[in-house]
Amino acid sequence: MKDQNIKTDLTKFTKSTFRKWHILKWKLVFTNTELVKKEIAQVRFFTQRILFNEIYLTKITENEQKQAILHEVAHVCVGTGGHTKEFRRICDEIGCTQKTSILK
Image 1 (cartoon, rainbow, N blue to C red):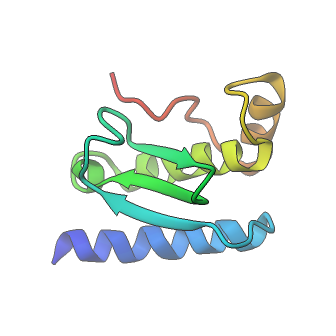
Image 2 (tube, rainbow, N blue to C red; image 1 turned 135 degrees about the vertical axis):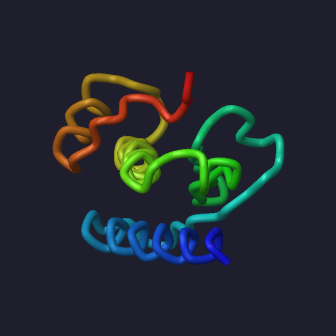
Image 3 (cartoon, rainbow, N blue to C red; image 1 turned 90 degrees about the vertical axis):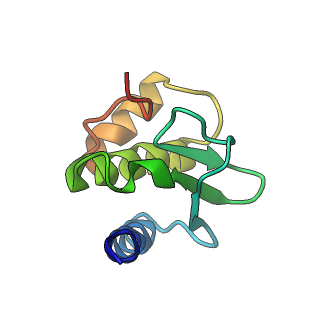
């Protein structure tokens, strides 16, 4: 039940963030597949999805989860191209302090 509550809260946070930054048609999807491997979350531009690795629902803090979402939202805003100056500028603008979605 705890996982479902976390999913609900993260989904609400993500939808709110999408609305704030005028991101249309994108969705948050929770997954436990090898697609995201060691990453907390990952962007899929073709399907307009942010994949969130379910392993991290209870392994990291709520703030770390939200920072991972904001990190991926910055990728959505910038498009493909990685961690460019524009990406870092968007991160700063949206309040993302987490510069990677991989935990070491």
